[in-house]
Length: 206
Ligand code: SF4
Image (cartoon, rainbow, N blue to C red; front, side, top):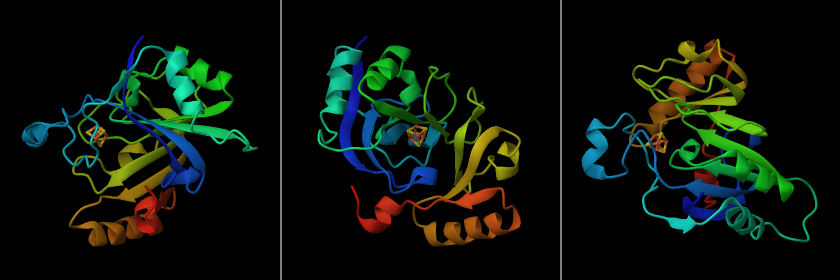
């Protein structure tokens, strides 16, 4: 099936448990919680998005897209290959055929999702970032990364889910400094949670 992709690039993972690790980022277009148009933001299910996931380029099939991902990994590099599939909401397009095509090229396949749509199986790393007011279809995985604070999405609501790591990531924007302090305070009082900072922004990594 064709895939619509916003961009593919190589960088370091900036957030969560895999922070600092080299990866190819495959960013799909489109999301089910916001159209991506400013005029729709106020009534969107997710209203704090800072990502442009509109438009993009079409890839006709999984082999072509997996080949484009592999082309960005240095051919001489040893060690594990990692692709981080994100968006927009990647679960709208990610399917088993693409996961298998990436595995065929020796990639570990990680996905970062809002958790509202089912995922293919055989993924190597699943990050769920829940949004207030939405129901989770994905209730287990490797890390749950909650943007904090969110009205209607208290950390306690997610603590019973089956994830290895639980991260609070301070909401970006004009209240960021206060949000960092609030996240620190929450991690100190509820040690199940760890602090996740957007280190790529701090370090100026694209
Ligand atoms: S779910 Fe993610 S991609 Fe979709 S609007 Fe919210 S922050 Fe943006």
